[in-house]
Length: 274
Image: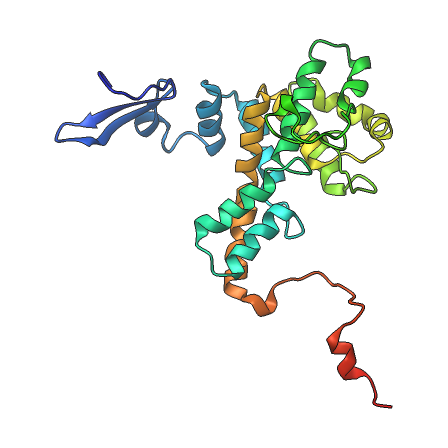
């Protein structure tokens, strides 16, 4: 809009004739959202257009859709989802439950920062031959607090994209890797399928979903900050669904993990008096 103090390459609006605060037409990177896209474009098309500034190809949109399905619900054992569940069962507003999920899911142990770090390693691999990728992807700096090159983040204590507490590669990670590799036009996922065993031995840890997501996002041409943001966004549906479910169940049915207490009061009531 002429004379507008807003500066954005993403969005252009034209106001209604009778109300300068109401929108008549809106264009996203030149595409008429409500005139041409609405009813024709998919969710993946819109997200891709917003972030990358261009429309995806059919195969790119299909791959983003597949990644969205793989990441949509990490499940109630995931810390991000569990945080949202705690908000839901405690009666928190919807925004508070989602903010709790985002805060917990932003970390670098299975969270969005792990994806960011893994994608940065992939960016370094672009200048290398595939024979050097394993050493680059499994590189880990010694842990230090407030590492200056990560804007206040502590250095990660395990190779990014791998499960620090894992024993073997989960089936869902393997299935996601193979499916996404079959859709990808890039080199990373296909290489990871063929070299996963060697890669995991070098890391000393099994591949995590964050590692698959990082390779997929890199294959789609997203950079690390875009990938970090997308990973958070794509995992929110499951957090929202579980928060809503727990709000209906109430705290008496909250799925607390089984814990053996050394001094469990319940066992005292079961003891037979001497």
